[in-house]
Image 1 (spheres, one colour):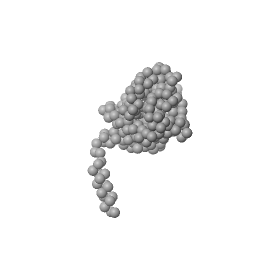
Image 2 (spheres, helix red, strand yellow; image 1 turned 90 degrees about the vertical axis):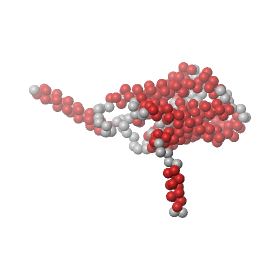
Image 3 (tube, helix red, strand yellow; image 1 turned 135 degrees about the vertical axis):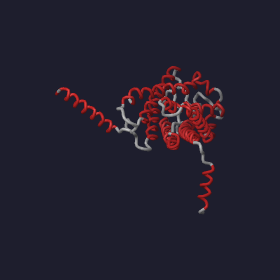
Image 4 (cartoon, helix red, strand yellow; image 1 turned 45 degrees about the vertical axis):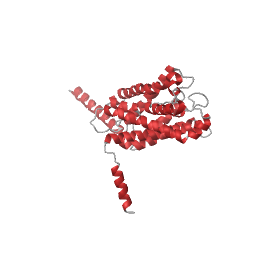
Length: 303
């Protein structure tokens, strides 16, 4: 028995990934894989049971909780971006190297693709029973929406574009607030939970138009899977060629939200050293500056 731990340790050392970048990519892959399995799994359960095992709210809960657990898995290794838009925003701000962006994005795409495949395997029998063996993108027995976003019947092309730009902008604006250490840093370990709450909030307020994809890798990976798995080219034709909207619009909205936060909030923090400031410390600095200004004014008056 004493030799078993040694054997396991040797085995783990043999398979240990030496490259830091490779470890980060694996973490991004696994984090988004987990998020997709829980999120799409919740959707599959509701759709194939025709609402007897869940509701719209449980789908949003599945997506939010899946994101939380995906972030918890990846955050200590890669920072748990799990979204190419978030990675791009950090690159724009100079907080993440551009050279890592393609590899992070590819890892996220593969994780989402395999996550969709896992859900399909888990719910294969349920999907076949629900559809009668006919995999559809639109109609009452459509199941492609389990994996990727599609526009509601009332949604126009421009309406969908605006929806995604606005939603992604708000999402990244809030994420930048969480990233901002000088705007009240969160306690260790709380950030994934707050992001999950943010995703749930967006789901219950902005989900009816097209399911608030927000994440190009999260949408494209499963869409590619459904294209291969039997839904066919209709996954790219539906909604008047809708597929590119959740691929492109989140980048536009994400950049807009990031710059909005930087220009309206973060750029106006008091100048400090590299040390992080708490809101209380910031208030003390402001009060000190005001006292110094009053003292200078008084001295000038006396002179």
